[in-house]
Image (cartoon, rainbow, N blue to C red; front, top):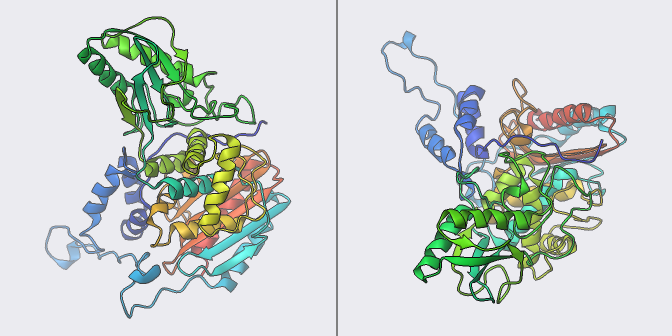
Length: 495
């Protein structure tokens, strides 16, 4: 079996604190309804999350039904305990912080589960209290392991730290050097789409860009052009080291719809060999539909002035904000977005936008966040490369930083994590009657013989814990995933 990250259909998220409160107050059935209604993407948050949060705002565990007579009214449900109130300086004065799960009880619950042969021959673990930084359990927490897609937590944190959650990536059209030439300039937007109906909410649109370009050309009295395209912002090999693989397209600065030839928006599918040229061809078609004649084939060229945002563009389209890109990447384990975000981190750090430049930039950005990167390697942004090396302690350290009220720019690292039993790559895991359903959020990782799980969970006392379990040499993915899910559920219930 070839190395690959499992693909799943895209399902929007429900924000962690809202889902936690909803599950505690109204039960898992209400959580299912919330997830089903969520979407679309909007500046890193889902519109339905806010609407449903507002609808829950007045319930507070009280009964608001009609009717008279005590025998006709159900008992009020207990309100959920505060989760974020005890984190940082925001807790009300005099209110004691809820105690974290007792380390001894947690160890007693985790040790036998870590001994499950389904996890393979090497297992490492880390559990920390995000509010205090206290280590509640660890086993080989500083050992460097192949993380598979849990490295996307690293990619997300580095990109958000480098660029901020509101940053948008530009795709532009500029006048070319030759008379009558225009150039489509890629900025590396992984949300760029050529579809007339956007597949996942806001993002860069070649359709809108073509309309604005046609309008600008007609205003200047031009109705015939030649089209060039510039994807020179990225350097080095476009093909990921694993080679041709349905889980990732060639990494270029100009790609529409992730190089997918069908209507899919996530999961494995054969990709185009030349995403840049295909995006330019799609743009040519869109211009023609809007009354602009494009002569000849689109040709790769270098825009005058260069860069992702040359002076005096004819038209511009902007990506989904960085927060939304991070959330979509984590929810669906999107390898294409991950590699794009790694390169954006490189550009923001003054490094070449290549695999090597991204590795240097991500390493430096984590060090600037105060994370110990000793023994780590970030050979790619997606986790498809087995050369990646990350420790369980590094992952829990990053998750704790993302929960820090003093670092709100990192919060999409938490809100983007799939929800157990409901969304993304955790939709079918820790589901149903599992005590972790709806309470646990985590990033999965799967390569042949490698299985990992890292995320956050609210324990029985209401404290937010970060955990990471990394394994190697497992006999098969199904058994390993079940064993990892048991470990995560134990973190949620041990006290």
